[in-house]
Length: 190
Image 1 (cartoon, rainbow, N blue to C red):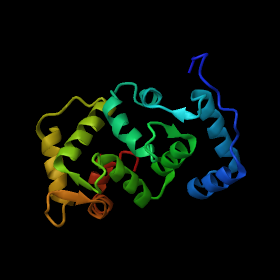
Image 2 (image 1 turned 60 degrees about the vertical axis):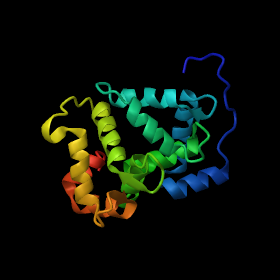
Image 3 (image 1 turned 180 degrees about the horizontal axis):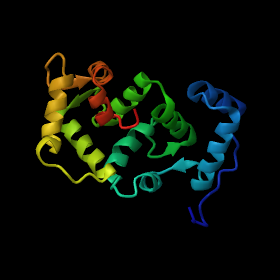
Image 4 (image 1 turned 120 degrees about the vertical axis):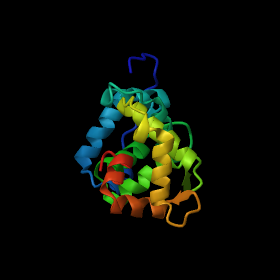
């Protein structure tokens, strides 16, 4: 944004890309093209970097500090681990986060929370994510029941069905689906 020396990507979306995105996101071709135009306007090189990703989140959460949350979310959106988020990666993740079915949204939320990418969430990861969410939302009340470590321990106890001190994706999704309060806490978009 505003960088006169940024390389502009002149390529258009191919019919194959549009067909794939339509199938995955359920957006129309017109909507996909509109998203693409906005994406290229904001990211002329066709790639969203972490700095720009944080800028976008700051617009949605002007009273919060999105840096920590964005680091974890960015790593999840960057599915090919190249340090940037392509238009396709962005639109697929955004579509799931905003309009995917509950299982798909919770699957994505789990992936964000699974900081180590080992298929499990432990208490340390959960604590880090709760702190990141509090920061994102501008929540400064972290005492008593709102203490991130205490909250993480409570959630772990509730979701960890096999009591191995780690939450699997299945435990996470099933637990969130059966507990509306927990679902709202862990997936504010639900």
